[in-house]
Length: 261
Ligand code: PEP
Figure 1 (spheres, helix red, strand yellow):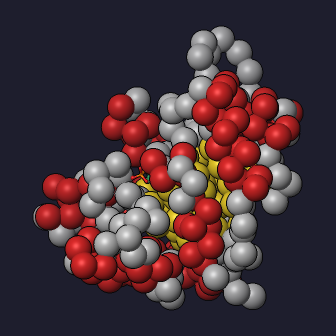
Figure 2 (cartoon, rainbow, N blue to C red):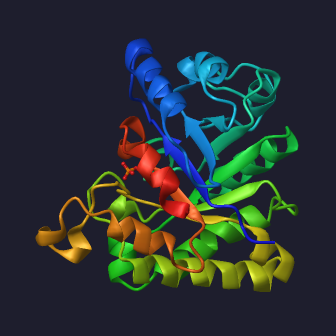
């Protein structure tokens, strides 16, 4: 079975009632022409209102969840509460969680397990820093991040892996299509070796990091306004979609959703 193209929109800690309502209207009115699975992740405060208003083809995701069902954990949300509220997805292990809030590989793995056990689907983020890339540690780093998750879970059916090089997130520096394909191919190889061929073939591995519908850096300024780079990444055999931050807040998100066609 071919893997369905997947595009996630991570709003991060952005937006207001008014601006998020406008994004929802734009998405509801947008011409989605590709058979893409689309999931958007507004800040938790807006999850329920977005869920109620967004078109039914678009699912809603939290940006984080904790490892316990309920209790004295001020400020946290449990995956069980997300499930109870009808939120089917959660992003786990985003690099901003890892670097700013101390989410270790182990905690990310535990969060993934708890979320899956609660019945959620997980967008599991992994990726290397610039320093790690420059010292040729990229594959070792992402494999270590996945190995931590392997120690906690056995069923990967409801996991989408988001490869997000930390140096590409929010920086305007997009990986080249060759860089993305190289890592995605290695990740699929890891899944095949460590989990099984079926899981390797069926798991979506999406790319994240400054994906935008206007990005043309790889192609030169004369082709500005070209969407080729993102399309080139999308066309790589092991790239099954995108996780989009900043551009998911803009109307161009629709073009990115349609990049999978
Ligand atoms: C992200 O937050 O997951 C992300 C990829 O951000 P951006 O697209 O803004 O780089």
